[in-house]
Length: 465
Image 1 (tube, rainbow, N blue to C red):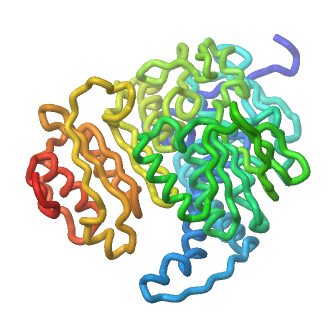
Image 2 (image 1 turned 120 degrees about the horizontal axis):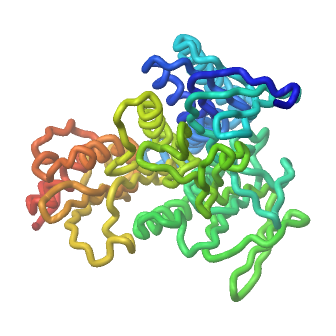
Image 3 (image 1 turned 180 degrees about the horizontal axis):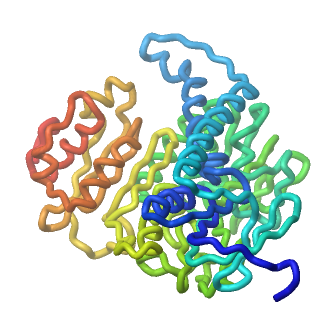
């Protein structure tokens, strides 16, 4: 053994303290394991500190800031002023409160939290380096790796923290840029575009694909495009960002190039798994061509090694990581479990909001498959009318036996429909089950009932069959 590499023994090691990591630690502790958790930055991970939570808080603030634009037709005149330093203080306070709450739970569960960066050196050993550069070597019985993902960088548009920034920096700007250009039209891009347009920026989205939200339902994407354009957001589809110089972003497609005046450029081109930072291949795990860790249904990547969250294939979503954490902790503790969900809900907090759960019958992978679906327009929803936005719709999909297999919706507050939609698919609810469930009036949840009635050929608030 090399002098200075004397190791300490731990029982179950969790690497990463985000939604997957801390959930795995808490679950394993409840099952009787002695747990050590290594986190290189802050408890709560990307989602809590520089992702889901601050972005959704900022979305709510942007909605408040733009109330004057959306309430005139309702007879209410409002003027607002945004103080970004105060906004940042509020969001950072919110993040701190939630992070402290998670730390409290970990402390009560007697989880040993170690601040540092872990890298595998052997199949059963990691070296943990703290901020001062001190190395600690840990040998473990089992390990659950949840190191998450990082923003994708573009070699031709390196971030400098001032004029070109990533998605995390966009959540804590000290001022509102006059002209913001976002490179990437995925869910991060459209959410931040919505935020800054409502805060007063002139926003342009540049996306290499021919639709916003590549991979999403094309009808939802087109309706979202119309909604974003109504907010004054410019959208350049099929264009590639080439370079940035003298406050101009150069973009091009196969036919032409253009220059977009930009005070700030945000690189929001997606995220990549942090499999390299932890050197997970030294544990015996295998990587896919995408950089994701190959796992089985128990999230096992190698003997005594489990990987969860953004490290593995599937949508990079906090709720997926949390669900996988339960499976991995159970498997590491000898409890039979497997990650085999019927659906993983996808929500985009843009304006309008989008939710998609389960099967999209318009997706290429289901071409030629026979599904039934019914679209209920929110123009026939009393709740949508009271909210002042009836432009959206919900689409409910069933198989030929009448089992609910998919939902798609776009409109105001539709994110809140994701829970019922997911439950219906996971429990193999039927059209009759939805029809037989009394939905409160007036709520957006009623639109699920209305669409189910349409599937049964008995629409209530629409004429005809």
